[in-house]
Amino acid sequence: MSAIRVVVVDDSALVRSLLTEIINRQPDMQCVGAASDPYVAREMIRNLDPDVITLDVEMPRMDGIDFLSKLMRLRPMPVVMVSTLTERGAEVTLRALELGAIDFVAKPKIGISNGLQQLAQEITEKIRIAAKAQVRKLSAPAPAAAAADGVAAPAVPANIGRLSTEKIIFIGASTGGTEATREVLTNLPPDSPAVVITQHMPPGFTRSYATRLDGLCRIAVKEAVDGERVLPGHAYIAPGGRHLSVERSGANYIARVQDGEPVNRHRPSVEVLFKSAARVVGPNAIGIMLTGMGADGARAMKEMRDAGAYNYVQDEASCVVFGMPREAIHAGAAHEVLSLTQIAPQLIERLRNTAGLSLNRV
Image (tube, rainbow, N blue to C red; front, top):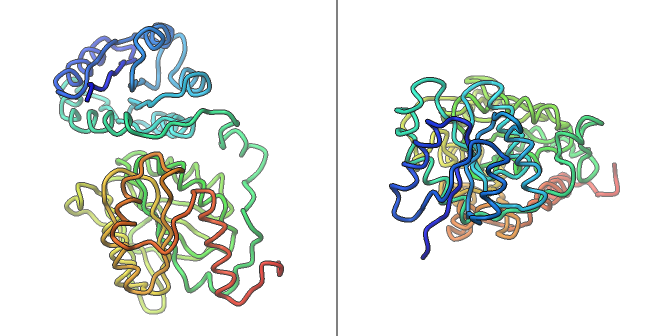
């Protein structure tokens, strides 16, 4: 198998040198070019035909977002963003994922040299994943732009009814999951059951992600806080670097946000969240497994099914990376395997029918 050909795009000569060295140490990849800005990168991409590019968020002459937007319209290819651990960096990185970047690496604000070397495994793993990911051409305006005119309409009429107070929706996602989760949440009505989400994401990004989703959705979206009640019409996202689960407190469900060792190499881990769904919520849980690399959450999703939960898994054709969904299917966890755009409508229809409501009664 031929080596993964990578072009590095970063205005810092030090970062270009470090990333080139990290990439070239890997037996299965090669840095074929390093560009100081998008104009140089454009010519390198034309001449070198790389498999993956790493792209700095903030650069002179043309920033990474403008370049990414043009690239994904004209020559879609796998992109791993290299962003800074700042609020501005988080917001721009989320915009990049919206435009079609596969994933991102958060470089340290200080100690760049040592910091990037410590991130070498993460960087190269994400390049490998990106090389195999499904990339789609950017055609329609990205959701954030459309949202300025109003909140996204739900896929089907609202009015789920009393069932929303009994059920909880659990979502697990990784690579490609920020936009997949957005697709599900923006199509839920205001009276949706509570939604609890573990998305593999580092500290410093989940708050901006929750704020972004809150502005797009009919339900309220926030970063989860330890001990708070889990309420219908709300979605709770696991804070980066901390595990999220649910517990029972009298008649209520509460969020439990905790430190702890990584599970399946992840913190937050989908396994932790889904195990709590099986243990605490049982038949009132609804599981959704979205795009992502690896197997995190697959076994626990099967435990959810065994406990009476109903589970949806994203299909291969609509996944950026068909790792976690594939493993969930192989584990026997899925009741339905659906295209991403079908998940929210099918879920709502099932809830309405379960509550004894006809789709014609709005």
